[in-house]
Image 1 (cartoon, rainbow, N blue to C red):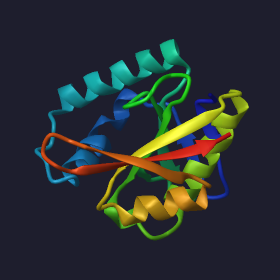
Image 2: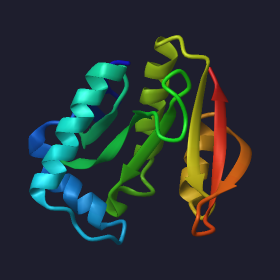
Image 3: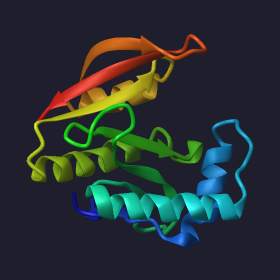
Length: 161
């Protein structure tokens, strides 16, 4: 997939080590401890390495006019396979409700189609209504559920390409 995508309002790009600080803050918004700067840089280095090996990656999302980072979106292996990867996205809460996730995910969907894959997946916690709205706009359909060890329901969504 292309590692640089543009939309009307957004630039999606490959990770740089300098992205570590804002990524740490995004992770903290999940309600977990903020990772160290060193651990986050290592994560980014590993993501870049895997992107070159696999040809897919999460990409940073930056608002073009403001120049600020608002999250990430891209393709991952996650719970699936390289042949049928998952689309994944996460945005800062301050960027929610403005259509950015749908806009970024649409660009990633187009990039996935260009790779000639036949199917994409997305696995989403049953509680995440906003992500289901994004996936519905992109043409994903709910397929089945699985459960984590803690009892959380994970809904599998599929999109034929």
